Length: 114
Image (tube, rainbow, N blue to C red; front, side, top):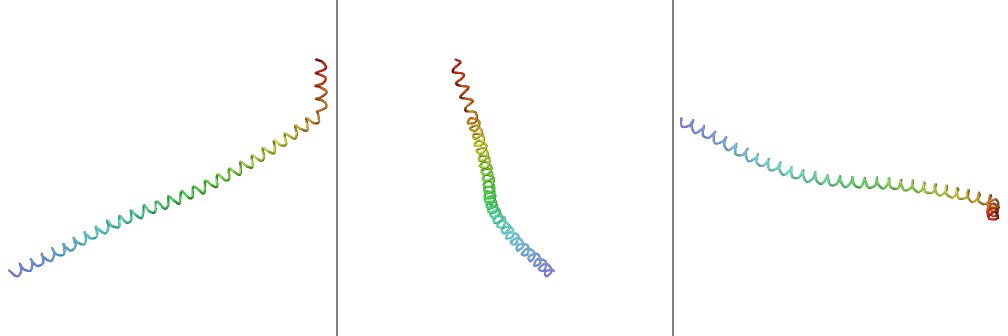
């Protein structure tokens, strides 16, 4: 029976050693998983920063396009308004010139009546 007890004891010792090895492996894997999580966190934050910078660049470029289009539109409208103003001024000058004699006659007539 002693041999049986020694065999059982040997098997239990082997199981305990195997469990200890497995526990060590599990601890090692847990540490590696923690390291991978940290690396993933760093990589994620880096990617977020990169994407944020790219988004800012894209938004700035889009804003520049919008601003330039607005400037072009404003310049076009300004030119159109200036041309209309010049046209109206020419029309007024033409009316003044064509009715100048009548205006002088009216003023002289008004002064003479007074």
